[in-house]
Image: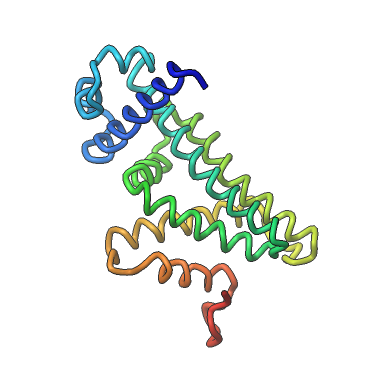
Length: 207
């Protein structure tokens, strides 16, 4: 990668970080391009050099953030497969990876979850596409588990995958907002119990 491409990636990263912080704090409509540029430490023209509009910047921010989440989930699944782990172990590793991502990017996660509930945004179609990218990684692991006989054939793959992703998102936000004293290990253990269907059991948490 040449130096100009590297600089542009670095500039876009600064703009993403500035935009997600401001929009999470005060909303999309209330956030101006001037504020984004100031927070990123660049000229206003630099914003428009990289993005045609504030809306395009936000759409690309969604793509960028969910793309990183998707990559984290895929890496967790791949690493489990490389050591011949089961599909349940892969799903558990993905839960852990999702929590770690949200812990590193709380502002983006709050923004993303909030936007999922809105249906009148210009970027709704983009949001649906990037959401499906993340969910499809979980769908793949579920389907592979069914095909290998590790999981029940009665599982509704699309709905279960969406539920698992949603569980991680909501639980992590609740953790950060209301139970910040808990460690990621603690939160992961609780979600691992849910994943493995042992909420009503009395046995130890599988490791």
